[in-house]
Amino acid sequence: MPEGDSVWRAARRLHAVLGGRELVRSDLRVPRFATADLTGRTVLEVVPRGKHLLARFDGGLTLHSHLRMDGAWHVYAVGERWRGGPDHQVRAVLGTTQHTAVGYRLPVLELLRTAEEDRVVGHLGPDLLGPDWDPERAARNLLADPARPLGEALLDQRNLAGIGNVYKCELCFMAGVTPWTPVGDLPEATLSRIPPAAQRLLAANIGPVAHPRNTTGRRRPGGEDLFVYGRARRACLRCGTAVREAPQDDRPTYWCPHCQKGPVPPVPEGRGAGRPPTN
Image (tube, rainbow, N blue to C red):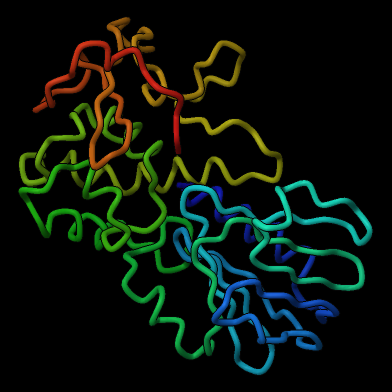
């Protein structure tokens, strides 16, 4: 599932080619909205909300999409060959006189009144990259269920919006606790540092030039962009201990058994070999 920074960049790309322009082509390839036609409407803006994308049109309509694991929006110049996947995976086509935005494998695509956007994003917590960002509120949200493991609480978009599995693992490493540590067991100072750290990490990865996602500050060859994510059985960049992997909520989760304190699940034989990252 994309992280909030990826969705933010997708919104920026879409807004750059659609914002302020009238659609000359519209095709929503989902049964519920297959007859909807946005041709002739002007795209007012494309904005992210956590991991959601909202394309707003004149006349008070919003096209809401969510990428989840496999969805993607691609942008092509008119006449350029589409390369995002086979035609049967296309779920949305929005075209201007110069560009075409194509949504592939979108598991969520719906048209609604702009005034009703809260119906689909109103449940979200403070957006790490949005104007409503409030680190103190995010910390209170995390602590609302003290028994909940920190990793699960960070992924719950109702607490704070934008964190995915990569940043979950990295934030737990930076906090020095395992993802299975109950939120209520964290010292107040540790908990209060996590939301601001999350915001800094995401904000640092939304620059105009695309780079590999980075949390370590090391931008050089050698696979040192992330502290623990995807590094099962490789040496911890801080202490040299082999990084371990185990599932949490059906997601591969990585941690350093030396640098991170707290409960851990049993790791079956061979599990630490590491699977390819899925997020």
